[in-house]
Image (cartoon, rainbow, N blue to C red; front, side, top):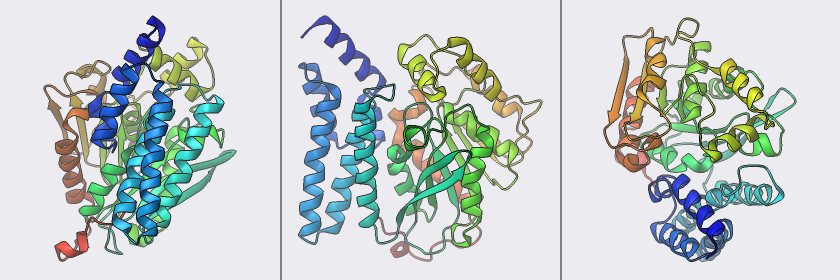
Length: 370
């Protein structure tokens, strides 16, 4: 193995540790194979794509045999593999676009197998469209809907496992790809130089337009936590806001991956332009006041986010229902406490969004769909 390849592999494994792979839905055996094979010298994107292809074939075979649940589970594993395959590239080269297109196509197939519980959403905004995936609970009437999204690299179906956990509790989820993210960036050309709160409010418009979706909440992860807080401050329709591992005033951190991803989201490598856009988007508690319940999550072992980075969110809370929860050994966005984190936040949203339409029995919370 060359020194260059070894260095690249180490960088990928740091940015996408085992805890993150599992948090986003990768099968454990696939995650082990990805680390083992890339450590032996194979290219990260090629291994992850090959693992995805095997899961896609397994899903197709299961569907043809009439085993829908198995097909759905295998397809979801394939999505996670494709998600991490494209994350080998920070800039939108042809390989990244091709892999993301495969991810979108595979997600559409999952929608087709979901019996109406998962659907693609496109919403006009500025000069293009915002892309999202709607995941519904088994009951027709959701207890509420959570607008859920990531930051500089984890987008859309990266949070499908969380959406499934919310669905088991009767909540719907809108898995958003905002400006600078996923297809919204790569195919629609929408970058983070727009009004971010206005963009995420378009997703809230969609939720509010469907009475079966209930009250809207918002949950942003990593840099997405900043946009969740800014949107909650600007849009009074939002009934609850969760910030997970967010930066109230982001700056260019001394990590190559962070710098390159920030540049791709803005469409510029100019450090001064990136810094100015970060300043423009920052959360200011003197200006940005959050009236709805607020939950802030932090991992004390997070190398990107420090306690002082999230204090402005709490300072901007007008609600008496504002709290901070810290995991002493928590990684960035709490990858290593995924199950507990997701359950804690899901239950928190249920208590704040439920308008009395709770499922009447466990059978209405079946988990065998999308």
